[in-house]
Image 1 (cartoon, rainbow, N blue to C red):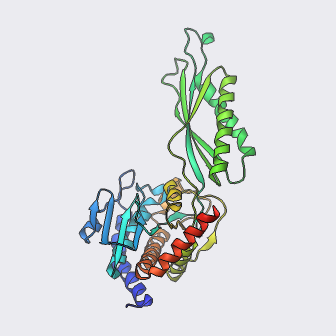
Image 2 (cartoon, rainbow, N blue to C red; image 1 turned 30 degrees about the vertical axis):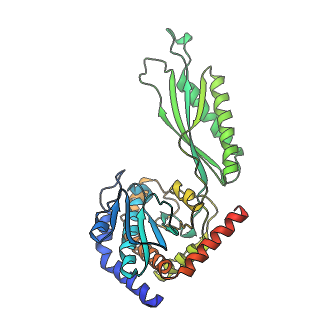
Image 3 (cartoon, one colour; image 1 turned 180 degrees about the vertical axis):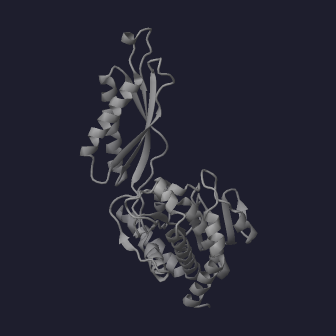
Length: 352
């Protein structure tokens, strides 16, 4: 059987050979389009919908793609690193299977991905989260004095929620955007709408915050003579549960590639909400690898520009190698897979 060191050297060499292609893939036009699975198909992966599979049976390791290529969140780098890691991993595959997808199904033993960020953490916290849609209803009367302004009501909703933030539990946050504010300045708007993203350290706290936001919104609208309806917009996402067996393994490989990670941060970071949901179903990692300084927030234009920097290229190639090394270790050592699942089961028993 090939030694771990030789196998790691082979995956690193594959990433070196792929370096220019990976960097070019990361520079392709960004936006809502799905990552291209064509390079995987040409390497022998079987493509079904938005999933690429190589090999068969267990262990089965999933490399998680983002569902888009938005640069302001670094998803272009994630897509390229995941593709590169998959191509390198299958070069050392002797048994089991590798799946590249944005929606892992059952029968998977580990989910591996990462998030470009402003910190390098072996396990980047992701809060429990959901979105709320707030619609405010007024009345466009025949004269201004007969009207109730839905936009004025919505402004009061934002004011009330801003005041609420001062007493939110630690680790909770509420952020909103206006999605509809009327059609004409000549007509008193009778309808206005906003969406609010709500996050909290756990699902129980999230539920309490949603209740407080709902109460604040309804009361604020009523004070202006309008009515607010609050409804959940999309699912409730679980907070992320790290698998330290896997994240420790990844961190050691990342260090071997020249980037050293701290164990974990405390404040929740931007990331893909579905990762939290996956982490309560199967062993999952979600490290953060610093791309920019903390002043340049993830999601900003400056962060998008940073995905084209020399640092971004370093992060891309190092994370691709670390992901490939971790995946190949899991495929070569069923005992490591069992350790990851034992840790997963132990946390589930404790309710953590």
